[in-house]
Image (cartoon, rainbow, N blue to C red; front, side, top):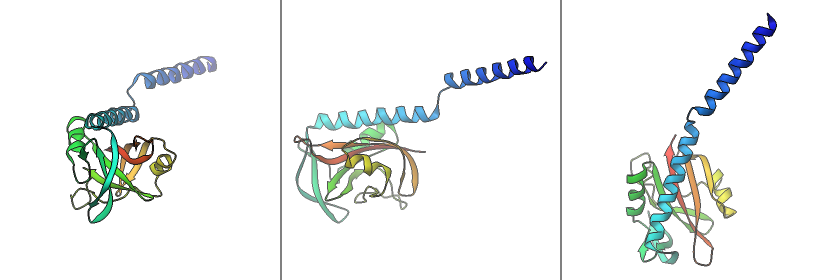
Length: 173
C-alpha cells in the first residue's frame, strides 16, 4: 500500500510541476512588457537622432544639463515618453545625468498630487542606480515615489560612450 501511495505522490508532484511549466508566469509576462516598452522607447529616441548634452535647462526649478536626441530637446518635452506609453502602457522617463544624480526631465510618472515627477531624482540608494553606475542596465522591482513598479533602466550614452542619462520604463505592480 505504501508503494502505491508513494507512486501516486510522485505522480501528483510531477503533474503539478508539469502544469506550472506550461502556465504563463505573471512575472515573465511583466518582464516581457518591460523589454518591449524599453525597445520601443530606445527605437523611438534613436529615430530622433543621437543622444547628446548641449547647454543647460531647468527641470522643476533645478538647473540641469539639456539632453537631446538629434535636434530634439528632451527637457520638459514629454512627447516621446507619452508616445511610448500610448503604445505600451505603463510609464516612461528620460533622466539626465547632473553631477552624481539622475534627474527626471521627461516623464509620465506621477507624484501624489497628480503632476508629472519632473525634477525628481532617481533614488541614490536604490537598486537601479548600482547597475547604472557600472554602465549596465537594470531590470527588476523598484519603489518609485512610494509605489512598487516592475521596471527597466538602461544607460543613455553619447557618441563618446559616456553615460549622459537613463531610459526608464515601468509598470505599477
